[in-house]
Length: 356
Image 1 (spheres, rainbow, N blue to C red):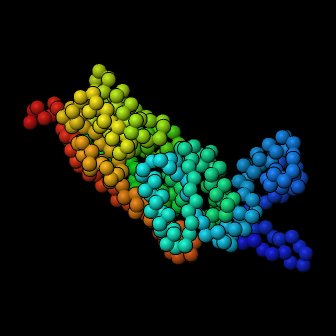
Image 2 (image 1 turned 120 degrees about the vertical axis):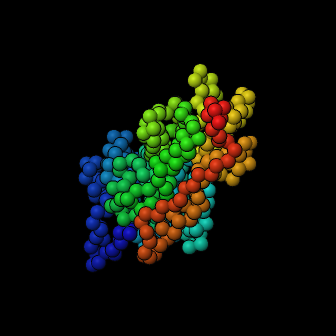
Image 3 (image 1 turned 60 degrees about the horizontal axis):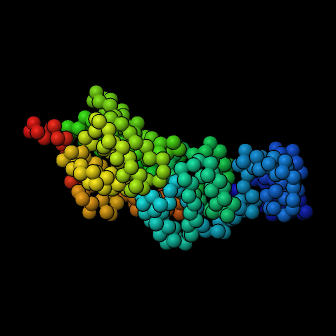
């Protein structure tokens, strides 16, 4: 939990809790006075550019958060919880955040939200900003972060939980991304597909996408197959990106017979592009999604996808934060079930159907 700030007694300076970085530590690391550190942090007076850079570098390296925020964190006066997601416009994240907010509001907490854009340095800055506001806890996405993030949270005793992933060494609410990808790949191979491609989200700074692709490749290798090709979408998972990636796959001389998409938005775009090019789904090519958003069952054809209970994940993350803040027992690792939903966008490959 947050460190408790003690009041001064008999004119003595307040005693700083062990492990909490203070102005003195920053001043020592930057080789400047405490007053200079205060001026840089508060912006109350002009300082030289050299001093400012030294102080900012020291703050970053030490994971310093202003004492005012630390006191708020310690006293739990803000009753606010912060969350940082990679892409607010991603429907899966948006639904998770909505459920998280509802659960926090029921317990009397306010949600503060930030977007990292899949950039670990931005995520670190957003977390630091939220801590500066004095949030009582944090909800993060994924298991990989800037290497300075976890040590900072540990030093401050911040309650946090990771979502969309499973890890044995940190509090988390999520699912096994490797197992989920293997499930849908095994299904397609079972239908007879041997030429399988993927339209995936960016893998850099995205442990979920990277894990799924690695799992697909490992399963196919076990069956003596290889991933036909992959198209990585470096932008937010948008319908247009799905269209562009599908256009590239369909323009190749050796088309795949099945395409695994990183989420339903990309799959929606892939379906639109196939239709615009006169490619029959699933007659000529099968397409799958990930998440099972509301519209997946109403596409033409209806989308085969993996159902991720994103609302449940958000609610459970909220339960973990609230229970932890209130000192109640709560499981550190909570796994949610992901299930394959088979619909009309998948079928055996043409060659397989012609022999049966």
